[in-house]
Length: 368
Ligand SMILES: Nc1nc2c(ncn2[C@@H]2O[C@H](COP(=O)(O)OP(=O)(O)OP(=O)(O)O)[C@@H](O)[C@H]2O)c(=O)[nH]1
Ligand SMILES: [Mg+2]
Image 1 (tube, rainbow, N blue to C red):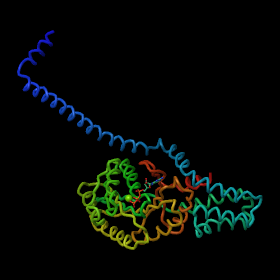
Image 2 (image 1 turned 135 degrees about the horizontal axis):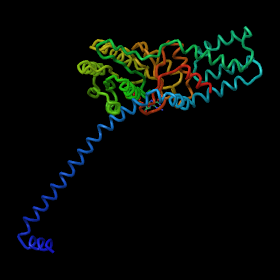
Image 3 (image 1 turned 180 degrees about the vertical axis):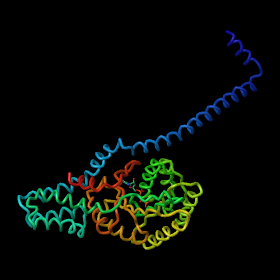
Image 4 (image 1 turned 45 degrees about the vertical axis):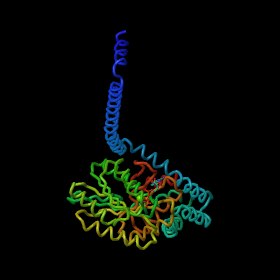
């Protein structure tokens, strides 16, 4: 009753200024609401990013190693079923004949092992058969598996990080366009942060419009800093600036992204050679040059490896998209012909889909 009275008196008076007063009150209440809710959103963004970084760290603990083995095998299934199927067919006969060798050779070539590497893998087996140390096709299978493992195990696969440097380590990431360089940097950044290293990403791919934004997304996902340059700017100077920033902030590791035009573009090779020289001239030191190769490109990867290696002195290969390829044999061609170790393998598009290359695990997965 009294509320109705108040309302009646309010309406009976001079209404216009009062309506204005009510409207002003409503606008202020709405405004305060918007500010409070946007603050809440801002506060929740940063712990989410931190949680992602810590999830990545926990993905790398020993508890997940068994799961990792299972998942590596599962994701290599395309490569392994093609290879294992061809080898099994080659070895179905009751004795070892010329046909057996022809079939084995074909299976290895189809899996992209390459002509020279295939000959190198089969030569010791031919000796064993000649000396009658192997007489059954089934024994040839395990001898082949052992030989392939042995030929891969000669290189160190450690990522070079010099903690006594007192300056940032620089890892240059090179490769043709679309190979997976930027994605690999994002994954590597998360892994290295999880190891307790501070990371800065240098956006040396200034050719492609979206490259900087793509790297920026990976920087926030992995909790790394980023230095970007102007689009079309000098890639070497972006990387130089990145190293300078990392030095002044005592950041341990600079991951430098680069552009990936076609490998037969001489200018790209000149550009990369310059990037490498300039990166080494600053306050940091290039301790790793990772060449990213898309496994689905097959033998072409070998040509790429030769050219990039000449320009930048590649120290390790990251073989990406092995989850979608039946061509795992390129691993042998690269390692045995070029003596460049495969250090990491990409098995998918998400942040934890990068694993250390394990020769034994890889070969046994191929034969399953
Ligand atoms: N399935 C699968 N996809 C991958 C892998 N690594 C990268 N990719 C995908 O490959 C595509 C190209 O990856 P990027 O990282 O942009 O390649 P890039 O070498 O930086 O390419 P440019 O910047 O154009 O030179 C993206 O769609 C990635 O998600 C992998 O290991 N497996
Ligand atoms: Mg890129």
